[in-house]
Each structure stands twice: as structure tokens, then as C-alpha cells.
Length: 471
Image 1 (cartoon, rainbow, N blue to C red):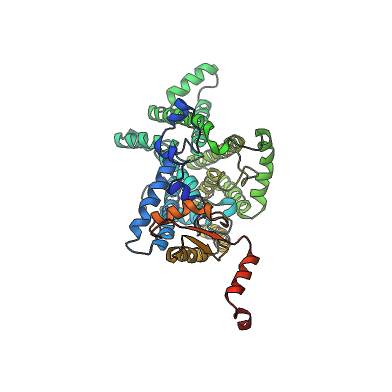
Image 2 (image 1 turned 45 degrees about the horizontal axis):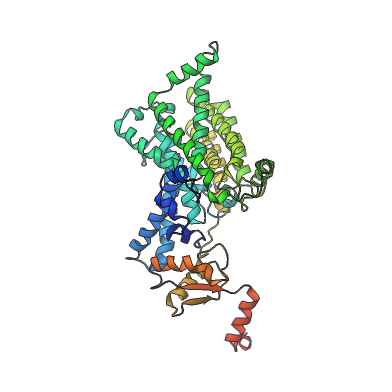
């Protein structure tokens, strides 16, 4: 994939990013009323900054400086996707071993729903942009990892939170995940609210409201109560300092306008491609088959979890407009902002399919596997490989690296470390610094491109007089 336009700002870094890296917990927002981008996302910025300042240089022992950047991006995406798939398989099977048939079945069920091309624009998890992958997919993966021991204890009856080492890791990790990504604080608060509601509904209905609340706090495991309280306090703090996020200070539409766009956002996600509709249809079929064919405690518990995931999705969508507005997300809902819901739907589909595959025998099992095979084929066929999207960008970087000019003209219309064409060389200052840092160039260079394709053609004809006669 091509390199994106946010890389230089986060890796050099840009002047407005430096305060983030100097103030992990945004204390300057409290003490100085400081305003700068993402004051509540230190660990995402730190991870991104550290990775791309070190890994490409390490890879240059084996590949060229230019190739090292694309290879480093690919490795990061593969690791993040493998982490999410592995964690989902653990959640689905209730087992934490990689080498067993249950894990393999769960992984096979999950894999086709990770769309790289195909339906990626509507249900993608691993973004074409490595920056967005670090800022959305990675935080979601870390959140899945944080909640894993709590889920295992609550659903599968393990005692992982009794282990002192696990508690220490969860404590440190709890701080890490809160200040990691735009979505995590809100997700944490919703999960805690629903967990509290679930615990409250399990209390004696004949008791008064106050007694039921008190009893709720008593029945919740102390380890859950402590760590959930910790991450919730931190999440509230993160949301508070996030009000000084300079990115959203110039918002152009009101909150009411954002809410009015939600229906269009849902309609767009569900109707532009068949990715989501097919998932929802198969989920409906699976739930029907579970209710009709498997009547046991495990199935009831699974269906109960599905209902709470549905409630989480509803609450998440209702609160999403409060998270700010960006012009490139006109309807608020987009594949990146709804990633927690997408992961939840993948879990519901895979968990229900896993249970049906394990339960059915004989012809019914083969018939159901045929259905899942067809489902898998649809997504695999849609996600056709599209290689070499970075071909012209790599050629442009090669020209910059070999040029003796301080300001290099790029003939191609491709993006070069940017979201669009750079027609003003002064807009490439930070990119030039990054290329030097990556040892692609020996000193900082600027570059620019023609403003439109017609000028490119004219220049090519002038510089190549025999072009027309050759044609």
C-alpha cells in the first residue's frame, strides 16, 4: 500500500505532535489549559513514533531503505491482524492454545471477514493507511487483550484474575489502553455501564433500588470492581482532557446535526456493499439454528452474550456523535469509527458458527459446512488482491533519493507520503525530513508535482520530441 499523509507528522514529528510525546497524561491541559492534537492518546503516538523510528532502520540490514518502509508497514499490519484474529479465536473457543482443532476452526471462520480490498470501505479493520491501523485497529486489539481474563473468568469459569502476575499485568495494561486510540475511553465506559446493568438485573427484584445497587457492588468480583473502577476513572479523565483537542476546535456542524446524519450513515454502511447484509443474514440463520437445535446452558449463555453485544452496539452508535466530527466522515459512521461493532459482529458470527459445527453430526453437519463454505467464498472472492498500488510512489521516492537537486520534480500523479498531490514544494518539508531520517536521502529535500494531468502530458511531449512519431 502507498504511504499515507499523516506519517511524517507522527514520525518526525511535527511541532504540534511534540507536546503529545512530552506529556503522556495531558497534565498540561489541567495546569496550563494547553490545546494541542490528541492530548489523551499518548501511547498510540508513542507506539507509532517508536516503531517507525526504529524498525525501518533495522530492516535496512536486509533490504533497501525504500523497501524497508513498506516492509515495516506490512509487518505491523500482519502482526495486528494476527493478534485480533488470535484473540477472537480465544474468545470463541474458551481455550488459549494455538495448536488445536478448535482454534483452527475459529481462525478459519474469522479470517475471510478481514477485508483488505473487497468490502473494506464498509467493514474494514486493517486500514490501507498504516497510521489509521495504528490508531484504530491496534487499540481495539489491545482492548480485546485487556478484557480477555475478565471474559474467561465470567463466561468460561476460569480463575485468571486470582493470579497475582495477571493482576499486575492488567493494572499496567489498564493505564496503557485508556490513553491509546480515539475509541477506547468511550468503549470502556459503555462496557462498564452494561456490566453494571447486567449485575444489577441479577439481583433480587423484590429489593429496593438502593439495596439492589448495594448488592450489585457486593456480588461483582473484587478484582473486576477494582480494575473496572481504575480504567473508568482514567477514561473519564481522558475524555475530559480530550476537550482541548485542537483537531475538533473548528467543528463545523452542531451535535444535533451530527445525530441527524446517523440514519444516513447506517443506511450507507448497510446498502453500498453486500458485506454487512450477508453477515447479518447468516447471523440470523445461526441464531435461529441455535435456538431450534441446541438447548443447553452453554447456548443460552452464548445467546445472552449476543444480546449484550447488540445493546453495546446500540449504545455505541447513540454516543458516537459526541466524539466529534470530521469532514471525511460526513455521516459520522464509517468503517473505522464502527470497528468495535464490526468486531462484535465477527465474534457473533464465528461463535455461533463454531457451536453449530461442533454440535451438528452427519448430513446436517455437512450441509451447514457447505453454507459456511459458500459464505467464506463470497468474502474471499470479493477481497481480490490488488498489488503494486505503491509502484509509482516507490519510483518517485527512488528519483528523490538519486536526484542532486534540492527541490525535485515528480512527474507521476501518484501520492508521495501524502493524501493528495503535492503541487507546492514547501508542503513537503516534513516529508523531506522523514526521508532523511529513514536514510532514503542524505539530506532533506523538497519535491513537487504538476497541478494537473494535462500539464504532465505537455511536459512529457516537450521533453520527448520523438514520442509522437514512435506512437
